[in-house]
Amino acid sequence: MEEIKKSYGLFQRLKKNNLGYKIILGIIFWVCFAILCNFKQVRVQTLDLHSFSHKYFISHIDFEFPDEEKTTYLRYDKTSKINAIYGIDEKKVKHARDKFEEYLIDHHNSEEFISNEKINDYADLFENILINSRFTDAKTIK
Image (cartoon, rainbow, N blue to C red; front, top):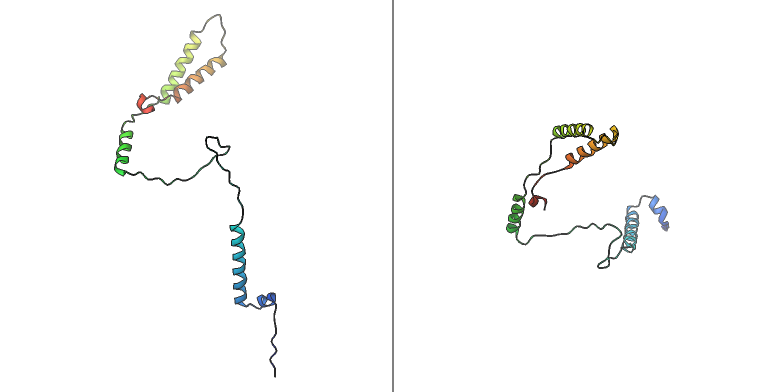
């Protein structure tokens, strides 16, 4: 009796759960995908010297200080020169606002009429200036 060899197509062999053909098909797929990713063109904006960029560029830079001891000393030296920065307590700011508002009400010119809204706006502006103000020496600001 002659053995008749049946030739199966690729899809029939895959349906038959032939593992070898599935692995070969997977390798072919990954090679095609790698070629596609490798030859994909991506536009990159080139930078010209002494020109302004229209977009932000953020990049990571590897940088090491050549002398770690000196760097540590300079950091300590710079931080030791920083003095305290003071602000005004909010209770005192509220108290100063109230006194300023009373001053505006009591000592305004009788010729000019200032509305209560204007006085309140000036007092709010004065309060915001006091809250946002910070006091320190010139070296700390630098």
